[in-house]
Image (cartoon, rainbow, N blue to C red; front, top):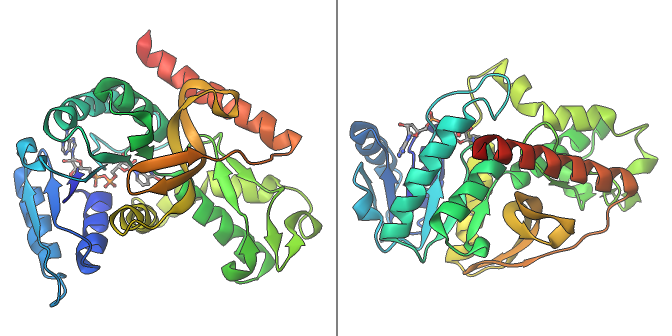
Length: 300
Ligand SMILES: NC(=O)c1ccc[n+]([C@@H]2O[C@H](COP(=O)([O-])OP(=O)(O)OC[C@H]3O[C@@H](n4cnc5c(N)ncnc54)[C@H](O)[C@@H]3O)[C@@H](O)[C@H]2O)c1
């Protein structure tokens, strides 16, 4: 069973993809019971005829018992200028949810989607004491999708011609699009652009641009999260950037940030080390400092 805690826009979109692809039973959990039940009733009409799975909604956490995967998309409010705006309330919320998951399904693989992503991944892992490789923050793969899209738009090339695009670090203003490894049609991206600034700004501010036109994003993160759930359920190994509590990898400890990880049915099997140029390495260091400062702001 896949439990999705926080059946708002993002959580329900993930539930819809899981159900319409006949992946597994889905449970929507929301503090607002009517919202959970209503969204489940709506998504239930997308169950394919040949599916053996269903979807239900509840406000009762005990029903997550036995879940193989728990996705956390709960949020106490909307931020306008920065993903850390509601950090105190979001950390309090994630600690409460961590206690519930520890109580009812401590063996589940947990995917954190709520913001501020890296800070919540860190506090969830510490509070729940679930092993760090089973707590995966999903956001850098979304940032990578946006990076690839912007390269494709800038150069007027299909995304299928772009290889090795990846975004690391914070899911926030300090995120690090890695340009040095990207090739387009087999040629280095650097031979086709004047500098990194325009695309970097575009990736970092993508959500702000989107919000000029609609209230909040939902489909990109839903698809990227679904891909991870699908790989776990179908035991297909994938390599994506995702946030994980680090213990020495990339020279960082006691912080969570986006790094390339290999994921199998048990969660993360390996953190991969990739070569970065000097600009990218120093940007990644700055990104980890930013996240650590946010974490410290809660401790103090
Ligand atoms: N990781 C990413 O790349 C990414 C992308 C988009 C959005 N997000 C984040 O995902 C989260 C959800 O976004 P959304 O647009 O779906 O928000 P939303 O407001 O539509 O939904 C959040 C839901 O969580 C519920 N909720 C709050 N506290 C809860 C609790 N303790 N238990 C159960 N349910 C609870 C609310 O009732 C609400 O229905 C936000 O934090 C958002 O910033 C992350």
